[in-house]
Structures are given as structure tokens and as C-alpha cells.
Length: 460
Image (cartoon, rainbow, N blue to C red; front, side, top):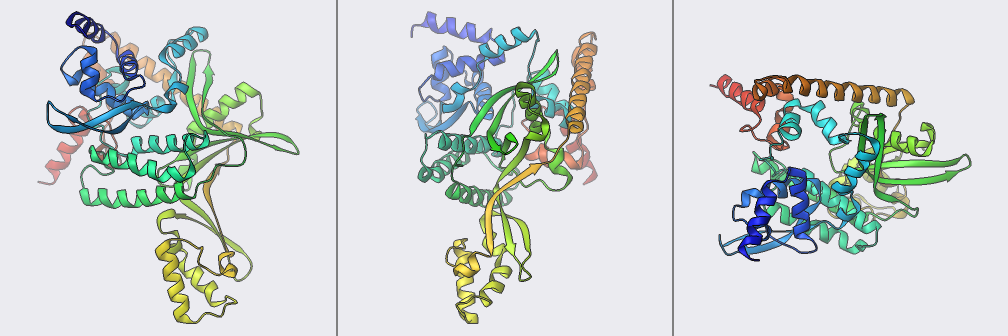
């Protein structure tokens, strides 16, 4: 590429806003696998900081991925090689989004993550969506690894991966992310390794045992939800399928979760995105809400139904990585009652082998059939009143944000007024999230910096 062309590309890139810079990087990658330096060279400049923030954002959005390593001869270090995700083409491009907005007569399309960011931490919302500050803490393993697992499931459903390849693909991606410094716990390496091992064992067990359903599913389905004539949400449903019964068609909407299990009130608290999807299906199909079911699929867990001596059953939800150990008391009880007349030593040896293999397969049939093991689906019960409450909260929240922006825009002291208006104190409750999951460090997130300063002073 001649120097004039490089300079033209560089100047054009510098004049482009963040979203379009991401698009330029995607176009530069095309079907190739390139390092950050190779991308920047093709765009005509030497400073990698021009592309690294956008690469980080694309990684977090799941639109590109690390596919390997390569020697960078300028630094003599192995560096990441990036590629466009296979499912990116099925996502709406920015041009397509702009056409949708134009047809609807709106300036922006909201997303659940944008709305939830404001609800969780207003200052992060200010940094990310108003000031558009590139994240400086892109080393949390949770989000990119979640994207990996979603992609693996989708590719398996679409026939792009065989069942036998699922665990190997996951292991490769986990290794690559770990190699480049992504962690579950940023501050405690021992804790990070403990979480890493348990997470790995849970997901490996899921992928080893996961089988495609025998009904038609659609994954990553794009949807629009109308809140008001001026407020629309866009989103992608993880999995949606239809079931026909005597009363007609039912729709099931599933959200894959690689997080810890939601319990009690938290199940309904975290169901907002699923409610939003139910609204979209209702609006598009006219189907009544009682025929639209929403559920979480917690991938790291199993749902175990255990037969009791009384004939009744008990249900437990267990982590996959040691579920047999968790069932050991029940297994021992039924081994003692087995028709095979096992002595105590045989029982303990058989139980220990089952625990070591984390499998019920070696147990006698009359013991194994006392346990029904299934994937952990949790259906969320809801009503039209829950839909109404969510819609009202969204309207109130969007109005609040717009009013704040209008107030700040009218101020001569715009930078300080924005920070004051979107300031939200960090408390002990949010400290784990800020330390391990937040995209922003205390260097950029001033309320978190203030929280750490006060905590350090109190420890003196």
C-alpha cells in the first residue's frame, strides 16, 4: 500500500466515530485472521492505541474473537490473532440499524444492556454511553467466555460443530483467553484459579452431555420491542422454539446463563430481559402472554429428582462438577437397598468410583433409576402486570436520562455537571463488581476511586 493511500485511510479513520471505527476494523478483518498491528498497518498508522480500544469493544460484544497467537517481530512477543465471529453476519449491521431507525422515526435503538447499565451504575453509563470513554479494564473472563459458550452452542445447533468437538473448542478458547490475561478474579490469583477450575469442570460437563433438542429451535433471533412510539429496544433471543399442544401453539423463550444460579426473589429480579422478549413476541404475533413462556437455562447446573424410600420425590439443583458427591448420601442409602446385596466395602468402593468419575453410570440399575438428571431450566412465572411495570420503569428511566442530558447540555460547565448529575456512590455491595467485572478502573471511574480512598483511610 503506498503512503498516500495509508495517510488517506488514517485521516478517514480518525474522523470516524466509535461505532463506525468498529465497522472499519470488521471490514479490515474480513475473512482474514490478523493481529492488532496488522490491522493498524492496513489502516495506515503505527500507534496501536488507535485500534486497541475498538478491538476490545468488539471482543466484549462477541463480534470478533481471539483465534490464536502469532509472533510480533517488533516486540518479539506472542500476540493475539483476531478473527470475525462466524455469527457476526447474522447480526444487524450498523447500516441495517440505521434503516430501522429511519423507518421508525427514532434517533436511537435501546438495548437491555444499556438500560441495565444505567439502573446498576449511573456513572458507568455516563462513561460508556455519553462520554464514550474506551474501557480500560477489559480483562474480566466472564463476558468473553460467555460469548464463546453461546457461539459453541449456536454452531452445534446449526451443524457447524459436531458434538464430539464441543469440549475441545471450549478448552481452546478458554486457554487462549487465559493466556492473554483474562481472569475471573483480578485481585486474588488463588481465588481466580479456584473459580477457573470449577467453572471449567462445570462447563466441560455440560458440553460433554449436551444434546440438541429434537424440535426446531432458532438461536440469536433479532427482535424489536416497542415501548412507546419513540422508545424501541433491540435484542437477540438466545433460543426460541414453538410447541404445539391441544390448545394450539406455545412459544418458549430461553436465556442461556453461564452465571451462578439465581435463587428466590432474584429469579424475577433478573427476568427483565426475558420479559422484554416476551413483549416483542406478543407484539409481533398477537399471541397472549399465557402462551409465551420464558425460562433460564443455567448451564453450570443440573436438576436432580431423587426418589425417597416413602415413594415421594425431592428435587435438588446441583453444580455439575461434583454432583455425584453431592448425592452421595442418597446413593449410599439406595446401594444398601439394592437387589445386588452389596456388602459395606463394595458399597463404599462403588460410591467412591462414581464420585471420582462424577457419573451414575456404574451404579446398579435399581439404584440409578432412583435419580432423574436433567438440564437446569428455571421457568419464570409472570403476568401482564409484570409487563406493565417493566414498560413503565423503562419509560421513566429513559425520560430521566434524557432530562439529565438536556440539563447538562444547557450548562456552561458541561464536564463537571455531567459527572455530578450521573454520580453514583460505590458501596461495599458493588465493590466486588467494580473490582472484578467493571470495564472501568478507579482511574476513570471517580466514584470507585473515592470509595477506595475512603476505605484505605479507614484501614489506617
